[in-house]
Image 1 (cartoon, rainbow, N blue to C red):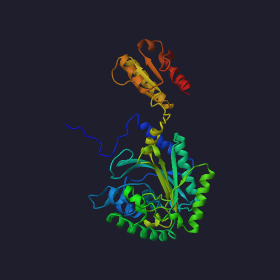
Image 2 (image 1 turned 90 degrees about the vertical axis):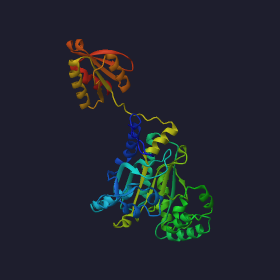
Image 3 (image 1 turned 45 degrees about the horizontal axis):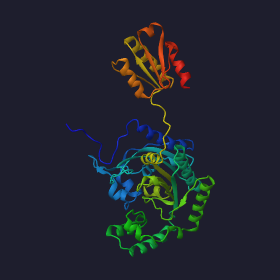
Image 4 (image 1 turned 180 degrees about the horizontal axis):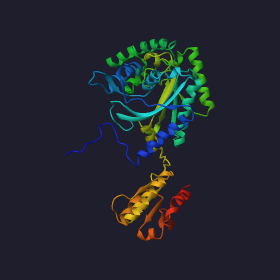
Length: 420
């Protein structure tokens, strides 16, 4: 019988590597928790139209990469390719914008799905942590999110990442730029699909990664030259706030991002050690998305950071995360009476917050001690009939090799003291 394998373009998270992914998720979420962001979780699939309207019908995500299907009941659904549209839909459905203070600040973590050509750093199933601030138009909010992402990366020990920053204008100035860009693109040697994309949303063409297309875009008009005074002032304040916080960034007038809903502030986090898939995260302001999906005007800003790519970035820099040991104490019983006594002690240790494991199955001392070594435990408790008759267990320090007898009733307190 053949053995099943994970679908192409996906991966399994298994110990011990999975501990790094959990640590990255926690590090990204940590500054959000202390900045007023509450946790939200949405379904893994949504109505197809939510993404068609929000992400954009001209984007590769919707036209080529979305996993869409029809249910037995005839509903047209899609596995979520990104998080913002789902989070905004959930916030609107729950009327969070009507409950009081704006912005509504939310963070989330989960899996997302895109049918892409698999390669290192680009998967069909991937993990992100995201944050959204819904219902306020304020440069300080844009700056806050960029600063929090920078803080999260630096807390992990990442140093060789860059922040790219741009403004995409708004409904006042972008149409003028759009027309100028379309005129420029019509004069290039582009294929029919790309020209069709230029008619629907010409900014998408600027995001085209093909070298033959990028070569022709060298002299393309830049949006920054078309920004209205309000957008210029807004963007300058974002830049000043980030700079004042000590966060470095690079102005990138060609930065577009791959989603249609972005307006004004847009940014991307890139790491040069990842090859072609250099973006580790990004985001921006999306002031019109709420109206696109049927809600009221709710100017908003957010980002999503890739857990997978952040792990790859850490590897590229040779950063080793300080991970807590999965097991601090390992219990090795010798005999049935010892099994009952030590199992009870392991339960007590867990109740006081000490990570403890047990030698399950019938094993001799040699085999059980091998398991203790593999567990990574700092201490091993060993007990046999003679030990129990004397009311003690043997406590072995796995680093020094030192072994001492400790009273059965004192072992939990002793380990609490040693492990701090």
